[in-house]
Amino acid sequence: MAEAAAAGSVPAVRHARHEDALALVIGTLFVSFGVTLYNHAGLLTGSTAGLAFLIHYLSGIPFGAIFFTINIPFYYFAFRRMGLRFTGKTFCAVALVSGFSMLHPHFIQLGELNLFYAAVLGGLLMGTGFVVLFRHGASLGGVNVVALYLQDRHGIRAGKLQMGVDVVIVLASLLVVTPLVLLASICGAVATNLVIMLNHRPGRYMGM
Image (cartoon, rainbow, N blue to C red; front, top):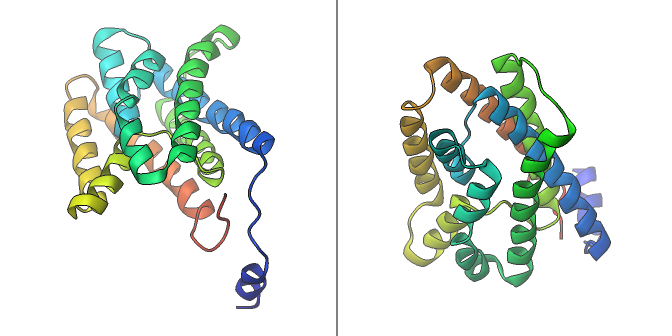
């Protein structure tokens, strides 16, 4: 109670531009390296990143190029729901993850990776990167922005829509990955969401 009262008495201070810029680089480096581990191990994740992985595995087109392209339509919904500042940061974050995910293989050569190790470590890295981005008013676009927009405009529950999309991605993934890979991917998703749940609670640290 005392901590909550003390926190409530401290006025929120907006991050400086250089702080936001540095956070975007750090957050996207973490996320993109997690993506690199997933890509090397043939793992999957949810939302637009999961869709990008599926297309990448089926077509051979680089993940970064697909991820950047499929996020383009979502900026309209981000602008309508969150405003120009959030949309601009999100565009930069998506572009950086796309670029970094293609650069990492030029700086590090990965050998054999244990499937579950890659899933959990990659998931923890991505979760940490997401928290950094969230605290500086950015995201990686995708279905969650559309879900929030449709919830506001048409009363469609955002959680149900997000879950529906992820279920479709998981079912489609069975066409290209083994059940063991799918199980490891689920472990990675749990790791990602655990980091976010523990470190991005309303009322604790709200980035501006």
